[in-house]
Structures are given as structure tokens and as C-alpha cells.
Image (cartoon, rainbow, N blue to C red):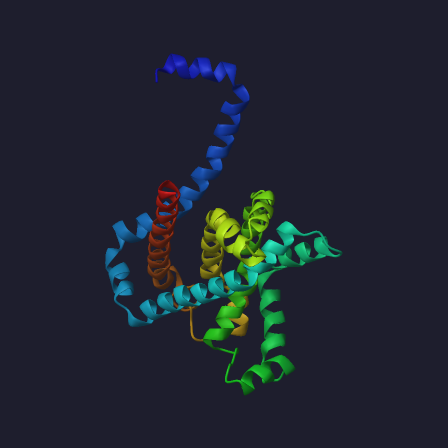
Length: 272
């Protein structure tokens, strides 16, 4: 495309040009923030990055982070999919309140969420004692990490799933019912496959949100250390030199997984 054509297009659509320039500032801000740290680490101090990549404590914390977030996302999908379907398909008294409750974890400080979760699931509480009798402990344990991740990531999945179900014409289900399909079969064979793209996108965002959680987990389950808490611990004890290699390693791992998931989703859409 020639410069003349670009200038001609800019004259015809000045608002789009201005908006593109303003929006590019935000993109540039995000890229520079991450690129600066990654560049400084890989180019200026690759040795400490390799040491972090071979440190069993670091590897264990990253794997624990990914695993706990996977469990939290799985629970969010199991419990959130039916809820999202009901919200998308039915109107009932208190529906707006339910939708607001779902969004509460997004607006409250995560340290507050951690205190609330700790008060609910600590060993001395009625709920915590009931789970303790079943052999499940939340304080400084994997399950404490999972419930904290679940709390902060649920809105991302439920809202995405609800939008997916709302995008599907309910007449398709009614037609399936008139042809003899049960409500469950109509959902499983018609609605769910059509909404799967939204469910997958919501699951990816919920997983990513769980991986990034710090405040709530620090209060209810400081140990075993997930990667964000280990990075914080290294920063408070050894400064940037001790924390930056782990931070860069976590970014590279999560970015790689995220790219694979997005490419898989696009490949899946093309196959369909």
C-alpha cells in the first residue's frame, strides 16, 4: 500500500486514524513493560535465568501453579456451565442479583477475598471443620490455593459461557424437542457444541486468571508456594536480582501455553 493511499484513507476516516493511534499507545505500553524485563533478563543476565529454570523449587512452584489453576478451572466449568445456561435461557425473580453476585470477585480487593475465604474455610470454622473431618484441609494446602483461584476466576468463565448460550437461538432446542429429543439430549447435542467456542475461551481466561492470582492465596495458603508468591518472597529477600529470573520464566511458560491454547481453538474452529 502506497503512502498516498494511506493519506487518502486517513482523510476519509480521521476518527479511525486518531482512535488507532490512541489505542496503539496502550498496546505499546503493554509490550514495552514485558519486553523490557524479558530483554534485560535474557540478554543481560541469561545465566540466572538458566539457574532458575534448573532450580527444583522454582519448577515445583510453577507446576503447582499450573496444576492448581487447572483444578480451579475444571471446577468452575462443572459448576458454572449449568449456572450460565440457566442465566442465559430463563428469567426469574432475583436474576439480576445472581448476575451481580457472580461479578463480586472482580470488584473486591483480592486481599479481602483471601480474608473472607480464610474465615470460611479455616480449621476453626464450621465449614472448615466439616471438610477437615472429610480429610480436606484448606489452610496452607493445595485446596486452599484452588478455592482462592476458583473464587477470582469464576466470573470470567460464567460470563463467557452465558454469552455463548445467549448467542444460540433457543428455537433450535425447541425444534429438537419436537423431533423427540429430551431436554438433556437437546442441550448435549445442539446447544453445547454450538457454545463450545465460548466455553473454551472462558476456560482459558479463567485458567489465566487463576495463574495470576496472588493476594487471596497469600492469606489462605502461603505454603506450598505457588510461583507468584515465590516471586514475591524472592523480591522481598533478594530484590530484583532474585525475583526477575523466576518472573521471566513464568511469563515464558504461561505465554507458550496460552499461544498453544489459542492456536488450538482457531484450528478447532477451522475444522468445524
